Length: 340
Ligand code: TXA
Ligand code: MG
Image (cartoon, rainbow, N blue to C red):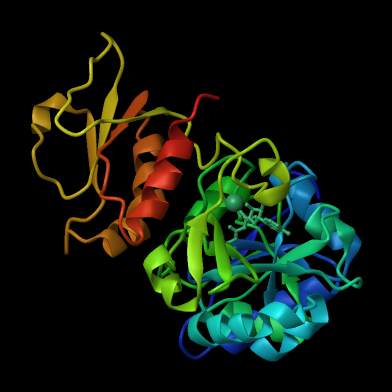
């Protein structure tokens, strides 16, 4: 696909969303790639069973081929089309998917042969989820299965609105379906389930809206240790990721930042407390309403994008508490602040 493709945006609102979804289905069935809304972040979608279409996703995102994609299903019952659920973990997987699907939880399971090796980057496993967004579900039902990573250029912040997708990929794809601002605002939690005694073992490969606390009822939960084989365990957990163009620094509680003469500084404040207006060139507040982590999660990429677009050189982020979805927020902030 060339830079000069005209990118059309169609709004999927109350009455017309099915017709709009149909436009996406037609393009996908023709091997094209389109951007679709989900409850987490916007996805760059291709037919998961069409290798050529999947290859386009990697090319458009400039994503390295070793970083596999998530497969989105239209319904729980389609799981068998793409994954084999081992007998030893079947009950746990069933209980977990019953609880969290449709929703922001992705499971890594042994893959079915039919799933293209391109989707899984040659891994024997496939990452699967059923999105809570009706447009993504409808399209996935019609196409069969949708391979969709976040609709941003590789290494950048995920888009949480149609205009953010346009800013990332405008001119490179034929269609963006505008399904409004994303409800959760952070990418899905990715887990792996293994048999274990006395309880099954649940490993969080990427923290997200479904928290460790939420998963505890289903097994012993642990976080994947970043190690040498990280590229195989959780390839997308590459250090430098989710990055704005500006440099990002996390401000330790109670400490001030030494500013360099001539640079412009933006503050990413959690609740909008404890800062002097005239000390900053730009300020964005993650949770101006409720002062809660869920609101901060929804606004994280939106606020980072706004600060970036304002042209500041450095973004200084306040840390948030690492409980619930706060773990995922800090994970994204740390990766965004990693040296590039
Ligand atoms: O919320 C989300 O998950 C969004 C929306 C669009 O669904 N998608 C998303 O995709 O965040 P992406 O490609 O940006 O991240 C997918 C992550 C990557 O970290 C990738 O390495 C990991 O999933 N992944 C995919 N297949 C895997 C596998 N078989 N084993 C381990 N990790 C896998
Ligand atoms: Mg991504």
